[in-house]
Length: 482
Image 1 (spheres, rainbow, N blue to C red):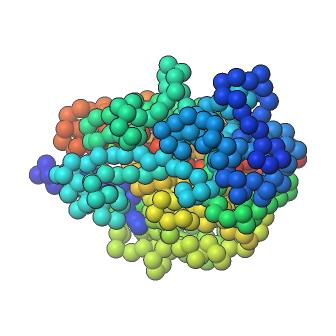
Image 2: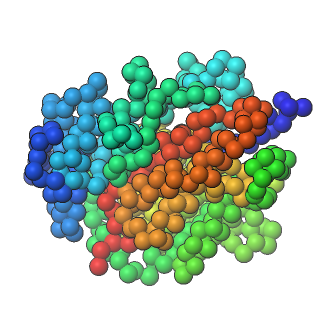
Image 3: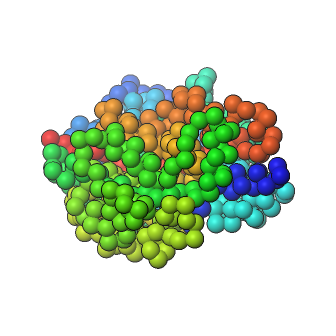
């Protein structure tokens, strides 16, 4: 009986799825120019000309910006590999120039990435592969390896010393297994960071132009008072939801995606919320969850877009209430090809997509969340997304911890007056780490006996934060400049 409860509970846990110009060469740890700059751009030399108009724009709106090429960094900074050299440059940029924002330009081929490594025992690997074949993508060594740009932002540990993410010095980073951490990882970001997954100079030109036009032209536009909220019933197993509610001692049955959307609507009470829900056929006051309705809502323009569905690198989907056998939008979800049909032009939302793999640029060069940003005739101006499998608790606990918590923090942070995209990303992580209830719920560590029964891994909170990524300009002013 314990095994049945274990498999039921663990089976509901994971979302199923699917130098040029302003270039400045720094002298490490030796400069009198503290607070001279706001943002450093890190990009390969091949992008230096294409990014110049963007740098000029940023300087014109008061975000003092300079470019540091990867080639310069590799020639000037220490480190075991290129990724660590970049991290040492970020440290120097903070200390020497007072930067608050780091913009990475390039996909994993153009600009190095850092992988987090989670180990699975042979027994656990077999169980996870059995129950999560559409979710956790393990390596042939039984590891879960995924990209984390938080690595470049978490510069200092709690003693204000360089945080290598590899305290056991085995060149595996933020390492953990089901029961212990091998590396001490601080997780608090010391700078706001975002990445543009550009592969060519043309990509850079297009994205730079898009951001410049948004910041110049979106201020006080009527379309900015809209929200597009897309949700359904993420976890359809009522028994599993009840088991979690009983264990946690709080929560109630809910259609998780729609519940998240309603929470956002309640935060933005003066905004016009355009809802597309899986429950619309039951008489709920929302549009039917269809590709047409999703695109119609986005095409009208919006400040924010929330997609609270299951996900994969190329699509999102969900279920009608209590029905796991049917996918919405019918017949098999909302795909990258559907993004290509958008025509919202310069009426661009910030997309929040806490769905599995939608920000995974390791498996593919252009994942779902980036397709929104990269779309030339609309899409989004930035996307918050996940680089591996997302974890959202069933029931109303969906917003209280794990990826649901970080997603909700985007909206709460903006409502609290934080208007730059990277500062919101940073705030999402800090709020989570400072929320004792979220941390406790993340691994159910309020009940040690339950851990023994369920086998919930200790790394759940860490992974939720390490995979949280901003695909966009971290200095972006949401809503533009007057």
